[in-house]
Amino acid sequence: MQREMFACENGLQGDPRLKAISEAIRVIPHFPKQGIMFQDITTLLLDHKAFKDTIDIFVDRYKHMNISVVAGVEARGFIFGPPIALAIGAKFVPLRKPRKLPGQVISENYVLEYGTDCLEMHVGAVQPGERALVIDDLVATGGTLSAAIKLLERARAEVVECACVIGVPEIKDQILLGWLLSSLSRIALTQVVGLSTSRAVWDALQKHYASKSRARIMQLRPQTVMLQQHPVANVAT
Amino acid sequence: MSDNGKCEDPRVHDIKTKIRVVPNFPKPGIMFQDITTLLLDPKAFKDTVDLFVERYKGKNISVVAGVEARGFIFGPPIALAIGAKFVPLRKPRKLPGEVIREEYVLEYGTDCLEMHIGAVEAGERALVVDDLIATGGTLCAAMNLLEHVGAEVVECACVIELPDLKSTAIRTIKLFSAGSAIGHLSLAQSKECVKFLLARSYVE
Image (cartoon, rainbow over all chains, first blue to last red; front, side, top):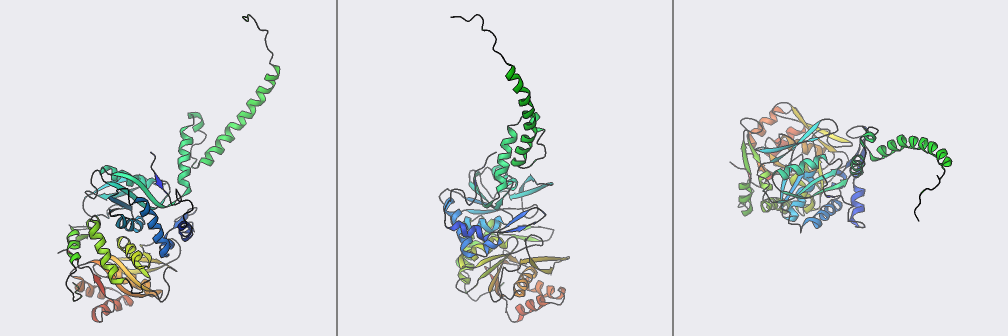
């Protein structure tokens, strides 16, 4: 399922505000665990101008799209969502971890690397037919955003777009990976089980089939040398 | 209920009516003050933010610290409007990088608030924002964090005050172990050094 995603750099090539925004985000290695390069937006929030510019960029894009709902994913979506909602005249709907919202809720489970998690939204917060925006600070696998979209669609709202300050490169790779895998035969798929990047898949396929291809070429070459044209028979003139 | 000696701002009435009470949440006997219904009304939400902005603009406040998670909803719009930075105060292990921690007492057990080292500098004037003040425990932890790095907490701003705040605060003083938190609460009682601004939108 393809969803339009708006990462800061898309369609904004050369916007003078982007450089400062990008530089204001700091990377913390190995948080929350080894191997993860954590994109920390708190340093962006310390720079008033850069924070304001971030909000303005989103507001400029969405203010004429007739959006009546801004849904923010707990907790960093709560930081960016409300200023956008206030500026475009929309309501703000918090999407929360389980058991945080009082009153009646609908829940949507989603898959994590290990295990599952769950997002909740208040019943009655969103009306059928409303046009909605989903906000989070960052999109990685898209799992959380997919759950957010499902919640809004279950309430029969239309999700116009998902807006994130940071688009982690892995998401583009995940899309590419999905295309690669869907183009493979069953036999080829067995060679790439468990691989999680498109590069890894490509390398595995190349390694596996290149050796066979080389062998096949060696087989065919002498045969082509030996080929002779048979006498042509019964050619009509 | 705190009275600033003026007539109630006409916007406050609508704000009050937008807050809903959910009985017995998160546990029996608690009447939960739910601000999410306020957020569904763009005008009332805007009015809430405006009330705070009007009070704090031009007071040379450079830091708005919001308490996770509902302080994240009200704090940033205020920070953006008054030209201040926004500093999230979070539950343990959420903030990456180096943090300082402040423990505080709950009814049963303790909890903890964290702030990034380097987010706030000595001498900065700060505002603490949360949706609601009950015992004041969380806000005191927030104030301690900011004062620990040498900032001056100008005020704590909350949308809702629970009516029995003062009596609960006195109880809380006795429960806290010796430390600056006690001093702050008692200062608040006697000298009003830390003032709590309320939009007076609690619901009976």
